[in-house]
Structure formats: C-alpha cells, structure tokens
Amino acid sequence: MKPTDDAGIGASPAERLAFEQLLADLSATFANVPADRVVAEIEDGLGRLNAFLGFDRSTFWEFADNGERIALCSAAAGGVEPVPRGPSAVRMQWLFSQVRAGRTVVLRSLPDDLPAEAVEEREYVARVGIRSQLSIPLSVGGQIIGAIGFGAFHDTRPWPEELIARLKVVGEVFAQALARGRAHAELAAAHEEIKRLNARLQAENVYLRQATHGGSRERLASRSPSFKMVIEEIDRVAPTNATVLLLGETGTGKELLAEAIHGASGRSKRALVKVNCAALPATLIESELFGREKGAYTGALARQMGRFEIADGSTIFLDEVGELPLELQPKLLRVLQDGRFERVGSTQTIRVDVRLIAATNRDLAAAVSEGIFREDLYYRLNVFPIELPPLRERREDIAMLAWGFVKEFSEAMGRSVERIADESMAALETYAWPGNVRELRNVIERAMILARDPTLHISLGRAPAWAPASPAPGTLHDAQRAHILRALEQAGWRVRGAGGAAERLGMKPTTLDSRIQKLGLRRPR
Image (tube, rainbow, N blue to C red; front, top):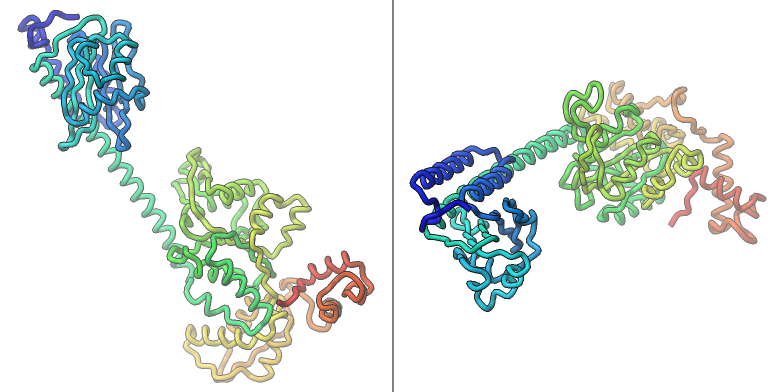
C-alpha cells in the first residue's frame, strides 16, 4: 500500500498531483468511450485506482429493475479474488439497503463497525477476511442505479471525506458512461427494429397490391348442398388457429376459401400472404419461404425477408403444398411445430406466430406411401382437412357463378350484358368442367370479349388437349360414379353388411371404400 496522508490520497504533493491527473485521465477516457467498450474501460479504471491507492479489491455494482444486485465488473490485487460477474450470490441485505437509500457506507474496521442487524455481512466478512470496506451509491438522473465498492483485506484503513468525494465523482463518471452506452445501444436496437418493421411493411404492401382480399366471403354464396357443407366447415374453423388443409381439383376455388378463412379469423387485420409452391423453382423456394442473408449464395446481393417472416401475426397460404421438395419439408415441419426457422445463410433463429392454410390437388396419403412426402408433415398439415367438390358436382351453382363473372367483366370492360342465351346457359350447366370454376371464369371472359349485343352467347367447343383428364357426361367414369352413388343412397350410405352398398354392387367392401375415395364421393349431412 502506498503511504497516505489524512486525506487518504498521497503523502506528498507530487502524489496528490498524480492522483488528480489520474482522475482527469479517467474522465477524459470516458468522455467518448464506445458503447461496447464501457464495461472493459470501467474494469481497467478500477484496476488503476487499486494500484494507485493501494486497494485490494474494487467492484462496480448495478441494480436491476427486479431488485437484483449485479456485479458488472471487479478488479483485485495482492492475491485477492475479484467478485464474480453477474447476480450476487450473497444478499447482504443491510449493506445494500443503505446504499439503495443513497447512503455511503464507511466501515473502517471489520467486523467491529457492523451493526447488530448486519448478520449476513458479519458472516461474509468472517468467511473472506475483509478488514475495511467503502460502498458509495451512484446516481444517474437523480436515480440510484448502482454502487462502487472498495475493500482492504490485509489491514484496516481510513476513508477520509476528501477521498470519498473524489471516488464518488469517479464512480459517477463510470455510471454516466454506462448509461450513455446503454442508451446508445437501445437507440441502435430501436433503429434496427424500425428498419425491420419498414422492410416488413414494404414487403407486406407488395402482397396487398398484388391481391384483393375483400369480398371473398360474398363470393362463397352457394345453392349446392355439398358446397354449403364446406362453408359450414369454414365457419367452424376460421376463428381458431388450427392448420387447415384444402383438398380438391385444380380450379375449385381453394385460394378463395383460404381468403375467406383468413378474413373470418382474428388475424384478418394483417395481409394474407400467399405462396404457390409449384410456381417457384426448387432452388429458390427455401429463400422465398424463409428469407436469405446477403451473400448466402451466388446472386444473393441483399438480405431478403421470407414469406413466413412477413406473415408473422397473420396467415400464410401455401398452395400446391404437395410440390414442396422433400429436403425442405423438415424445415416447414419445424416452423409449424414451434414457429422457429433460420434464413438461408444465417444461424440466427427467428420466431414467428403464423397460421397455416395449405392446399393441394394431390393425394398426399399416396405421396407418403411413395416416399415423396413426409408422414409427420402430412399429419401436421391434416389437422382440419376440407374437401372442395368439383364444379360438376355443384351444378346448382353454375348459373349463379356465371352471372357473377358477367358482372365482374361488365364493370372491367365497360360492357352491358342483360341476359345469357338459353342454349348457352344449358351448355354451361351440362358441360363437364375439367378446369372447374377457373375454367368457367375463363369461358365467360372470352365470351364477354367477343360479345356484340346485350345477349351473351357462349361457345364451349371441346376441351383443349392440355385440360386435366376428366370424363365428359356419359362416359364410363360418369356411369360408374352414378351407379355407385345410387347404391350408396339406396343403402343409406352403409357400405358393409347385409343390404349394404358393397353387397348390392357385388364388390368387396375394401374395394368399394377405395373406389368411393377415388371418385370423391361424400355422404351429405
């Protein structure tokens, strides 16, 4: 320990001057210290004070909002262990209640100077062998935010007022620098959050410009019993957060139903995010769904938010989910199970709250059997399946749908159509519609372009070569379907047993089950 005078600073004018220079150096150091260097500089400053004044240990404490006392940093010399960083394992309730109240605690001779109520402090002093201790409260903006403590282990020592005053100034220089660094870090974090939210808002606006979500519920009006059942199922599942799997042929309106489910949910204030898994190259679909970091691969010139990140707090619609590459399916399963994923090229985990609506025209159970679709993902998607009937099974709706499209195109094209020719409507109602509602819309649009008078004439012609294979009325497929349907109705939709549909048709029940599924027959409620 260096020799000291009554002020406890130094025995000679030169040492007093050196001490004042040390204080000035520390103040200058903390004037512009970077936020990420504050704690390290405080620890270095404590070490310099120890060396100059002969302290055995000094510690900077921070008081957390929850009442915890945290050792931010500590410096020690002379074979003494520094205080471990982090929350204190020793309560010392009396000592720190004094400090939190803004009182400096001066203990010149330990344990003699401790009051009777300082039981924990007395035990601590006996255990570690400390002889003298000074604890100074530190305030920022009028609030006690922590304390600085100095201890002597080898001998008792005086703590003169002038020394305490100087050390309090140094401690508050440390505290102010820490507060500035924290404020700077919080401001930087706030700026990053604003940037993230702006990027998300811009990305979401793209979807809002690309798609109109309003009116989807109105477009679900139906006279068909089978489609009314679908609407009932939507009404039941929409208010929940359950995953929905929409099944049905291409063009049956799965996207429209996804919009209706989202619109009737508690997430409707946010945009529905749509992804067509079949329309994206396998090499890009991962970054499209989960985002990427700059430089993640050749051509990744900037960071990109993924669709799941954009859909946080909302709903994501994965159309043609059966086309998702097998190697990407575990990542989708993980985000469905616990809402976590990483961008391509990043190890940082992102958490989201997203509801999933998936759609497919494939037989996913068969795809599982073939090994091209994960069984665990299939069960995770198949929480609430809804099967959409093809248009040929809801012929009651054809006229209503046709007039809905006429109105839509009349407004868009500025043309007036007062009626649809009788023979045209008859043709619409008897056509097989391999492309379902989408094909009907295209047919009406073409007819509206060619229309020359208020009566709309529609020419269906023959189905194009690229149309999905679907038999026209009168084919063996239709005859078989009608025959099985009639047998089911006559048997009250009972497949097995005496008088069941299988017995009526002369088929094995298992074969009939398979045929019913293949033909898409469903028992009406």
